[in-house]
Length: 468
Ligand code: FAD
Ligand code: NAI
Image 1 (spheres, rainbow, N blue to C red):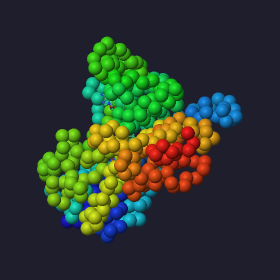
Image 2: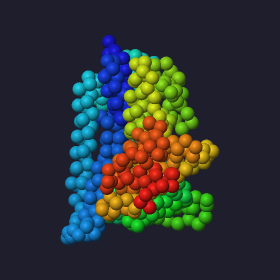
Image 3: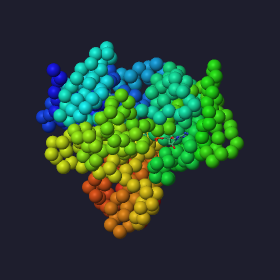
Image 4: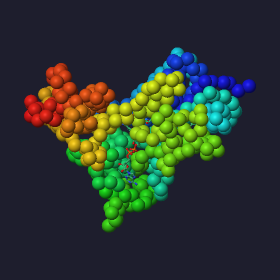
């Protein structure tokens, strides 16, 4: 007889495992199914966590090589032990994926390893790695199957020399020349890792600036810092073709608007031109689950699909492909099923690019406010005028606060700077509470901290910053 659960979650990534835990907390009999050997989805296995581990290690390496002399610390040449760096990254991943498995046990969520297929509303078949099948009955099914990299036609990934983020997290040597296609999150984060470790990195971006979806001032500001550190950029450029030679991959490039072609030779190529929802093998067409033209499962505000009893969250639906967005949706889908009226304010979901300096943003960009015809005021404050940034010798970047011209309500905060990813939490909280720029400006911020730059930018909205 088929095992019966109140909730069956397909996918044990940040969306799925959090939904599973919350369902169990609320007393629902819950199973979470994943085709991987380890829990945690893309984020823990091949995404957020390994990339941040390598960003941290490579930053320490770069600092040891180039960043300590100004502090009066002399060391004779630091050298790279890549196998140890990779082993540390793998250990961090294992620790955290085991942590999720521990939480499954603690919360009494049944973790089922295998590939799930929905055969009918309320029915899921799971195929294990040994080929054996198991049928499960579900009161409710939550699809949390995440996303996969978008391939670039003409460049077949071998994950050795032509790689997606997965291959770029596991190179066994530093490529002498790394071509990165796409100047978005992955291209800039993993491009930074390998540049710090010694690769000559060239980022090829189709549009005329990196981070094209973020506030217009952020991309060019980061480009300037990364250029100084040795990363090369070819903007408004498209890759026309790629040829895999014995030693070298040769890319043919062309200006996005057409024009003279040039070639770019590299030892490895990272394709990072975005991700798309992953629904292969789930059986969605057979049961008639609606998807939009981008392949995203269509849901309403309670995350219900058009088929009763089937819900979807995370990267597989509309919105930013971010782990914490998936997590919030994992909580809300379950709480709504339990009759609670929980909601997500998508404007208050921050995004962070973990380069150095970091980029962090929450709320609307200036371009979005202009397009919506909303009158706004800007307050800006540079880290060169922040005492802590000076003591830390980390003065690149600025904080930009956008506030409603009539009400002073904070509409967006955009930061490029040291630890911007930590600082943005305050801005997200302010936005959740509907704070005004004056609320932030009148809040005491400890001195000397980087967060004082946010206070000063909030003061600057009213033209009364003190330290500039
Ligand atoms: P996923 O984490 O993708 O999990 C989906 C799971 O479903 C997978 O484990 C998959 O095996 C499983 N699955 C799929 N189909 C089936 C099936 N039929 N049966 C069983 N199981 C199935 N986001 C951030 O917020 N911060 C970051 O720093 C960050 N860094 C990233 C770095 C990289 C290199 C990448 C690639 C992504 C990064 N992301 C980051 C994005 C983040 O990983 C995703 O937004 C997040 O993982 C989405 O969570 P999810 O639960 O929707 O899906
Ligand atoms: P992305 O959408 O961030 O960036 C893709 C870039 O490639 C864009 O700048 C786009 O203009 C460019 N592009 C598209 N087609 C191109 C082409 N043919 N040639 C050259 N450039 C092209 O996508 P990315 O970097 O692959 O990351 C996927 C997603 O994963 C992100 O959008 C984000 O949601 C998530 N992610 C989040 C991270 C974080 O939170 N720190 C880190 C890594 C990934």
